[in-house]
Amino acid sequence: MKLLNDIFKDRFAAYAFIILAIMYIIILLADFIAPYSSTFSNRDLSYSPPSKIYVIDENGKLSMPYTYNYKRQYDENLMQTVYKQNKAQKHYLRLFVKGEKHKILGIIPTNRHLFGVNNSGELHLLGTDINGRDVFSRLLYGGRISMTVGFLAMLIVFPVGLLYGGISGYFGGIIDTLMMRFAEAVMAIPSFYLLIILAAILPSGMTSIQRFALIVIILALIGWAGFARVVRGMVLSIKQEDFVQAEKVMGASSLRIIIKHILPQTTSYVIIAMTLSVPSYILAESGLSFLGLGIQQPDASWGNMLKEAQEYMNILYRPWLLAPGGLIFIAVLSFNLLGDAIRDILDPKSIVRK
Image (cartoon, rainbow, N blue to C red; front, side, top):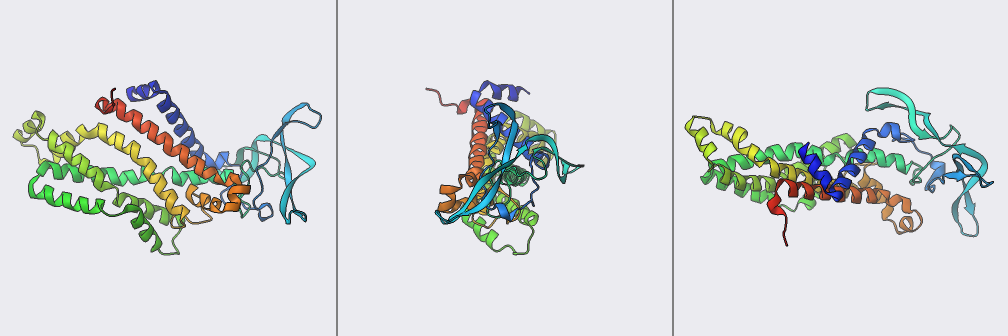
């Protein structure tokens, strides 16, 4: 609680914490908040622009929010497909509208969505992609993968790195030398290129869930070494403390001393490292998916959604497809700001004083 209070004393860290909290709440409730399911597709609305929301009617009077459906037409002068609003019928925005069936938090079955329009209306806040899928809804579903990959990888990285570095630093000698040489060999591997190679040789018939699990494992297997090396350096210092020597005299086992007395002393560094490492995992997953080696269509992640925006014509005429890139930027920046603040709070010596 004290840590949280200290975070809110830093304005930028407070903003970052609030933004991340909102993002995780939204992706957790994605099925309820998203107007459409992850499998929704309307090919007749391929690359439809974002729906325009009106609160002032044609008479200049204040109105309930409403929108018009887009009608696809071919413009002979421009020699291309264009979308024009069908103003014959208004579609009013409603809260808790009926839609596709889903389960809130994967438990509560319902067909209600937070907002939407009537059955004949189309609402696409951020337009659609080439397959007529709602970009806004897919952003929410894709965030579940992109925003959780870092935390899942840490469940492997930090326990392995802590124990490996703790054992190496505590025993020292030949054990320390051999363990550190192995860790340095792992650190010498160019991680992103290894990810590309390993992701490329994965069987093509794998489901996205299986591929996602393997990506997490791959990220973890190449991320523990650097962390273990830092922990080892801390343990070399901590093991000389009086309380450790007292435990040895009392006959405590080496494993007990490492786990119960030495590693807890590294808590501050672990919290800082965890916060600062999440952005790198988000970028790694997004990069793999962007290259087509991560999460595969039709399942969404911010990386494979951003891939569609790499075409020059899409950037020029369909800027809403860049939305995943904006969310990646916001998430990574927020984690970095939060991590810097936590580092300053837990390790005041790290603050550069002028």
